[in-house]
Structure formats: C-alpha cells, structure tokens
Length: 261
Image (tube, rainbow, N blue to C red; front, side, top):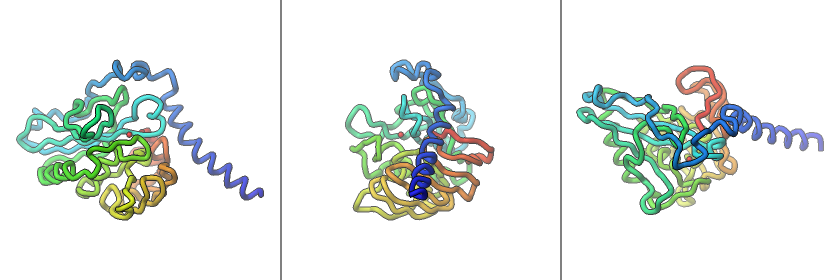
C-alpha cells in the first residue's frame, strides 16, 4: 500500500511541478491585452531577419509561442516561415482552427508576430546554401498534410500536428518540437508507427494519446493522454508537459524553457 501511495504521489508531483513552473512564469493577471483575443498584440517580435536586407539568402524558421488564454499554461502553437533566395518577403504557414474550411493558412499573420500576446521562440533557423531545396520540400509537405479539413485542440490534429508532419517530411530541418507541443504526436489509427517529428527517429502512437518516441533530436519520450515526458540526450534536459523542457535549451543555454496549439 505504501509503495502504491508513493507512486501515486510521485505521479501527481510530476504533473503539478511543470504546471507550477508555467504558472510562475506567467501569473494570472499579468497577461494584459491577452484577456481579449480581439485586442491581444500581434505585432512583430523583432526576431525574423529583414527579408529585404537578406534578399539573396534563403531562410527557414520555425516558431513556437504559448497558445491563447489559459491554454498557454499547457501548450504551444507552432508555425513555419520560408523565403527563397531572391525573394523579398516571407511566406508563413500554420494551421488555425477557427473560421472553418481549410485549416492550413498562408500568411495568416505576420512572420514573427506575437501569438495573441505571446512572444514566439525560434525552434529552427536555417539560412544560406542548400536552403532553397529545403524550402521546396517544405512546400511539398504543406500540400501533403493529411488533415487540411480537420482541427481539434486536443489531442489533435492541430497546428502542432501540421508542423510535426513537415518535420517528418523534411528531416533536414532537424526539428525538435517541445514536449508541450500538444498534437505533435497525433497519428491516425491507420498509421500508428512511423518517423518521429524530427525525422531522425521512430514513433508509435494512437491519436496522440498513448505512445512513445525515440529520436536523435527528441531523445526518449513517452506520451500519456497527450502529455509528454522524456529525456533529451542531445542537449541534456528533461522533457515535460506545460513547460516543454527543464535543463539546457535548444540554443544551449541553461533554462526552464517556456516553449509553451
């Protein structure tokens, strides 16, 4: 009985601690305009390269930002921007559920805009030689997304399912999606096993609710009811729900990342 109680308390702590960190990083009442989606800031975060100044450079970036309202304590929304060499503007691709019809949107918002008040973080930044070919493959992956008419915030398919699909189709992105990108592990019953979202490993999952991932970028990760727990060996960190990771961030600094669909 004591062992069972200890295991139960341990599980509760594992679930509560990441949420507590996420709550501490953005306490209720500090979100200002985020209380209204109509007035929440959507301006540039100032982190995308100037496409005009870099007109001769091909660029791909993937972003993650906390989702709107209370959901931001649990999950992130991800999107991708691309610019071919010779182009003087970015094209942004993401999945947005409201509005009906095809949920895959092109230039729904500005490339590096705040996601309803939430600052985006860069997950992938590729520039220069060879990136034009990567962009071509990204655009093919956008067209081959298998759920263009479907959207569910939990457990998917959603915005993170879309970006994970691109990552699988274009391994050259070296995409490591945070553990709190709910929906990244969504797989239909007809396709439960395949590449991990980074394209560097394997994954087995049912509807994003139960499964595991093992990859060079992701490390080892298990999925229980849409919540992800794991260990990243590439950049040592613990992968956790709500906060994404605890340890070295993907840019090599030491932090409790709030890579909070």
